Length: 295
Image 1 (tube, rainbow, N blue to C red):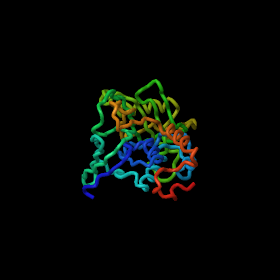
Image 2: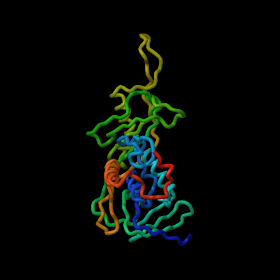
Image 3: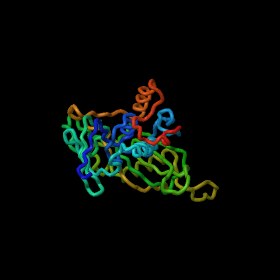
Image 4: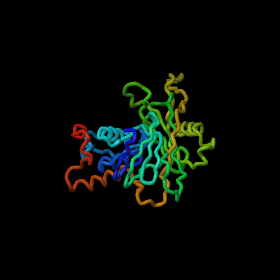
């Protein structure tokens, strides 16, 4: 097994949602990093899994569909490295994967590689057009001001803190749909990533200002002498920042590498249209346990 070398007609590179959908309908193996998974605020038009041959239930968020497909493909043997890839490199017609566990080097030969996400993939063809715009998401824990009716604030003319998403807090045990944490979404250049004016600190100030503008207030703090409710100030604490390119770089054409930029909802519609004439949609991999696909 130390000298084992995979032989693939086709392999999918990247763990984006589109990549997993494509793998489900083609049966190809997938190699990538779990960091490509959608963020929890990203929605998708509600889909009935049974209509796509993916099991039962309805899904509204991209991460829920991603988790579902990741489990199905794992049990079908289509994720040979799962979350164990420390580095991935393209070497002519091979993928060279260094595993995080024991730092083993594994090779897989392919006829065609379908690239859905080029982040941290080494050995790619020459770059013709560099993508230098980044999607930056700052996550905040809300300490005062969790309860309100907002789900999203949009400032389309702004690149910095263009969108603010509110979602049920995952820090609290139990079901607390009325208590929300938040994240802000910005679109920045590579130079702006290092400027203090676009730091999480500035994002925090701007988020608080936007919350006040729409009437969000902090937690209740009794009443004034006239019986009017009083509130503490809004308080949010920075948790983490995550950065992704808004698109793949544009590379020189290579006969055995295909770059796929299709969005998940478009890919679902295309796959459904292509499979319906031949019967109900179903996975190409016969080894996926049928119990996972039963409506």
